[in-house]
Amino acid sequence: MRHSAAHVMADAVLQLFPDAKLGIGPSTDDGFYYDFEVSRAFTPEDLEAIEERISETIAGDLPFVYEEISLADAKAMFSDQTYKLEIIDELPPDEVISVYRHGDFVDLCRGPHVDSTAQISACKLLNIAGAYWRGDEKRPMLQRIYGTAFESGEALDEYLERLEEAQRRDHRRLARELDLLSFHEEYGPGLVYWHPKGGRVRSIIEDFWRREHYRAGYDLVYSPHVGKSTIWETSGHLDFYAENMYSPMDVDGQDYYVKPMNCPFHVQIYKSSLRSYRELPMRLGELGTVYRYERSGVLHGLLRVRGFTQDDAHIFCRPGQVADEIGRCVDFMQFFLRSFGFQDFHVYLSTRNEGGKFAGSLEDWDMATGTLRDVIQSRGLPYDVDEGGAVFYGPKIDVKMVDALGREWQCTTIQFDFNLPERFDVTYIGEDGNEHRPYMVHRALLGSIERFFGVLIEHYAGAFPTWLAPVQAVVIPIADRHLDFAQAVSDRLRESDIRVDVDGRSERMNAKIRHAQLNKVPFMLVVGDKEIDSDSVSVRLRDGQDLGPKPVSEVMGLIQEAVDSRV
Image 1 (cartoon, rainbow, N blue to C red):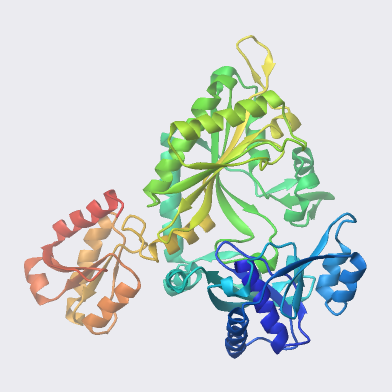
Image 2: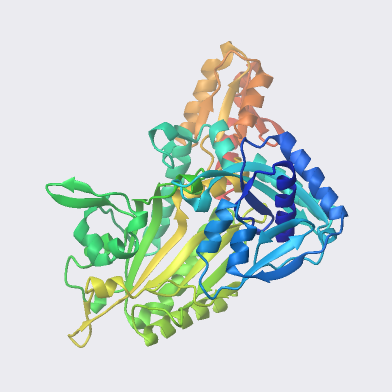
């Protein structure tokens, strides 16, 4: 239905803009879009006019008609459509060329479609965006119109409400309003500038990550940000990943690259000495910053950046330890995501491409895939199988966490690697005194700190739980004469490691409370003459609750209780 709606929209655009050039118009998970080249920028008024034509076409109950045509007929039919001709020219010789018609409109398309335009029940155009043709910034910039369609008006209204809520939670807007971070396109797109408040939340996340990893038996390491070309040649990255790497730097006549991944460096740490079976499993973790080239057209706030920090780990283990280590990884994943407030997640198991090349042996793949499947099933986690979806070097599981709006976000990856141990000749000395190849497992729980932080902002709509809030409490003096006492209260809270500010601005008390609420501070502590006399503070919460006056020591306990319970 949504694919059919995209055709009807393209028809409407051509009716209003006869010289428009059509790109492509696929359906998406919850809507559709179509790319156009027109002589001027679309306006909101244009969208209204396009919607009117769409409604007329839907009311016309026009059938969608499938037709197969020859290559010559296709080129003649789309002779004035530059982008369609490009698609036609790239079709394989044995490709069946098909079109779909409704009314006077015809489009190059494999389908499928609904039977008639009348079956497009509830359709709405959403917004306009720029999109490079085929995602290539060297190609023309087209205008993309997004829309959606549902089986009923009620379903459409529910979706539009969710969309409005998602816009209110947009991490790019909230990060700016809450002074968490910023981007500066003029000095490099896709690079994050962490402000003090955002940096404080990041530090809390990373400190928690480090503490829990030490408790779980990991050793944390640090690796270089750049590496000589030889390490990337040996790892194979320059063969299969070069398009995602930045151009090399010439250092003393040698090419150096900023790292796109941490894996080869962790391998070198493992190989720095002869390893015994008694040392395994070896779990090396790092909050390692990597740099990967992303086209400017796909950059999106914190969710798609060019420099980011992975919560990376690589586990080297013996065959008999594999099942236990994978189980520990899955359990660790659940602990971490639930600690940050994500209770629901879905697992995806990617298996070997039966017809493709692969590293390692069939026995290794079967063992690894079976282990991943067994661990998922033993934990009772819902999962889907992506048959043949694994990369060449090993099977993996990906975990998507579900946020407050029911959206799935990619986070955890647990990936076997049969490639790097071979390329770098990674071994250990077994009980028999001979060299053996360890199993190597890549593992990231949060994915990237940047992306995870963006999801956190949207999940909580910027109102972080107290343990994560950059400012946990703000002391609000009613008048200037109360400022010294406010500062003294602040000092007492800070001595107990409570993150606290004092609003000493010359503003009315209600304005200060409103300011704290807008900044989503969990606790507001108002002080005036009565509070000074009783050594107390009047407590308000960001949700509007007024807890009244309480002794400072009791308030410290309330805040600590909220921190301990992670609310």
